[in-house]
Length: 329
Image (cartoon, rainbow, N blue to C red; front, side, top):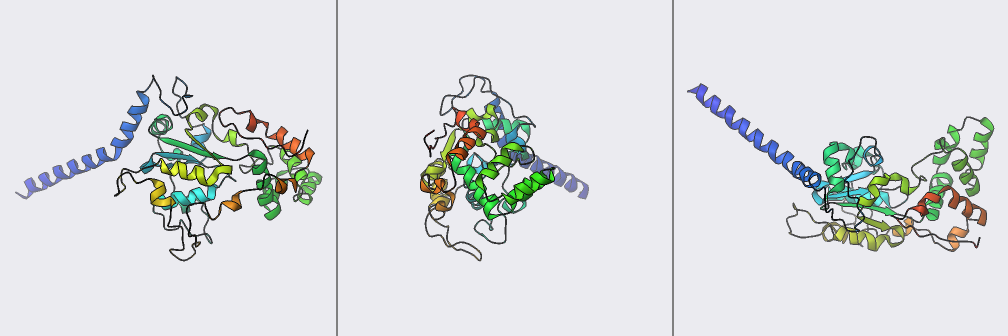
């Protein structure tokens, strides 16, 4: 009798485990089949997606860079670019994932994967990653910034304010004289541009790397939402208003309504006390005045140098970045 009960219990346990397994993998399987079967009549917002659907490869930049953040609940892949409000977006995603550390601004590093605990594309199998990158039901978003503003912001933050440029660039130069020259001129914008261009390998860094190169060329047509730093607040709201969750207890409530409008105040120790909506009270720290402030650092020569080094930024038809002209050439 006991043996029969034990066998019955084991069978029921196996059935429960099997059902749980099916429920776990089913969403991924459906997602993959939906995308893999869609070989014709691709429907994308901009109509620019190629006829042949590409596949994610282990060598793809989007897969190995850990900058493609995935929010499965909202069917969102968000590509963060340094110096384009990426810290604030990571905190937003931490909040959306119920991470209690999302609003703490001191003592934690929101860029640390162990802290933010936001999933990235590389954590998913290649087939699933391909499905998410090609399915029309997913949103793939990126925010970009006018290159001259972004380069100057990187310089001011990483070379003038911090010693980051010295450690990540100057100390990597083998020639002792050039290394010393780099260190002594780290607060000079022209010197910064010289060493970034003269020593592209030693001085490579994601903070001043071209935005266009952060996403593989084959994947840019699949980025179906591109926001701009100059419209940071309005574009961010527009993106969040398009996202809804199937697990939200309030049907059809958008991410903007749930997380963007309010709740950015001091709810626990270490949090900033923001009474307004997402990005509204801190966006000024991510902007540079496109007129007088830029001219405090740019000369006609340095402007031309930036246009030369980061020429690829303005050559992309997909992003269509605006081009500030500070001086008449």
